[in-house]
Image 1 (spheres, one colour):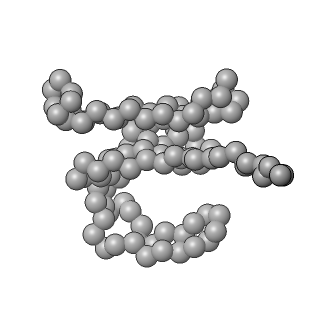
Image 2: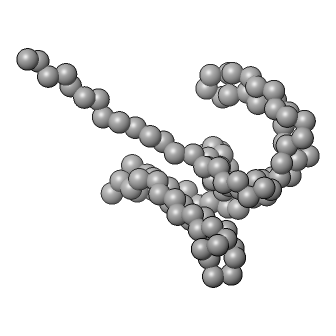
Length: 108
C-alpha cells in the first residue's frame, strides 16, 4: 500500500501544555519503512561548506549556524534522510516530494 508523506503540526497555543509538536509519516512504495531517531545538531558539529551529492553544487554556509533537530534514518548506509526538524528559534523545516502526472494534450 502506497502512503503519502503527511505532517501534523501543533503550535504551543494549541497544545494542552504549551508544547510544540510535530508528527510525520514516511511514504513507501513497497511498504517497508526505515526506523528513525531524534538528533540534536549543535553549531560546532555543522559544516561551513555544503556539496550536493547528486549535482556537486557547492554552497558556503554561514559562520554562525543555529542548533537544530533532525530525524534521520537509524540504519547506517541507507542514507541520512533527515527530513524534519526545528531550529533553535522554533522554525520547523521538512522535506516533501511533490509529483504530478503528466497531462496529455487533447487533439482538436
